[in-house]
Amino acid sequence: MPNSKPGSVEVGAATNGESAVRRSWIHPDSLVDRPAEGINIIHDVLQYAARTHGSKQAIGWRNIEKIVEEEKEVTKNVGGKQVTEKKVWKYFQLSDYQYWSFVEFRDYCMEAARGLVVLGVEKGKVFNIYAQTSVNWQMMGHACAAIGTPIATAYDTLGESGLQHSLDEPECQGVFTNADLLPTLLGVLPKTPTVKLVVYDGKPSDKVLEDIKAVREGLTVLHLDDVRAKGRENPDVDTKSRLPTSEDTACIMYTSGSTGAPKGVVLSHGNLIASLGAIKTLLGHHLKPDDAFLAYLPLAHILEYIVELALFFVGMTTGYGRSRP
Image 1: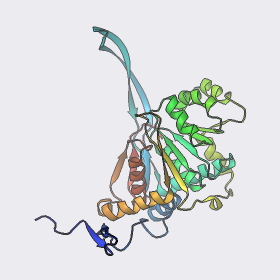
Image 2: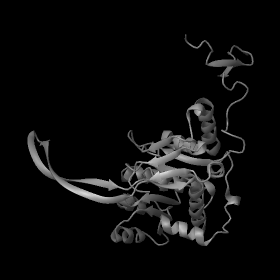
Image 3: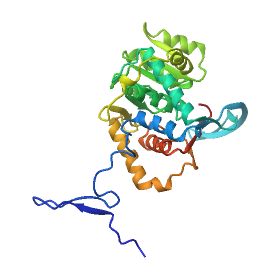
């Protein structure tokens, strides 16, 4: 038989020709605004997960052990004629998953956070993440959240115009990206003068690094490993005084730009934490710490971002489909 219980219940009485307010029958007494007491900002989720789930595997990735190249003939239609050309296909031989525990991930995020402070990243000014879904994307996101620095997200598929818009409109003070995206970033840096720091991962060519450093004086370009090293070298850097409030902006999430310039949605810490509360209330009984999650959708989209945050909260292991951290 179908469930006869209504999906919502009335709260209070109808007034002035308006119907009564309705809330979910699961939580009729108040709006859900957090998944647990003491969880008010994104950084609270990081600390809660480390405290609660400890040495459990939190987050994993696979390294590229070997690249196999294979030349194939591809036929395509060009001007109404069938043309055959040769293309090189690359296949990756990957390692087993490598994991960090919840405590390790928290500690590495805080290394990055302290490193950003040492490098002059300011509280309240936006830092852009223009990168593929990965462990390092999450690390930079949590590092910024720990020092009151809002992030702006940019899809790694954006071209120069879309990237420029997502850097220029929120006046980003810095950007994190992947080595293979640095050439695109290079094309927009001369037109985004507020960017003072470029953090990257991977192994870019010496030429692209030299070209980026030459864009203007005062532009700092560092590998994420070097940022973390600065954090380890400065363990006493004060991050607690920079923690945001639930009303502060956590993220400006930009669209993919498929219908014009990317559009930014401003989200507070309270917005995101309330979403975690809703997920726990509605779906918590389905989310088990012993399960695992394969992450591959773009973290620049709110769905992937909030799902990964929720699973981190409940203690589920996340493994990234991308073939490097």
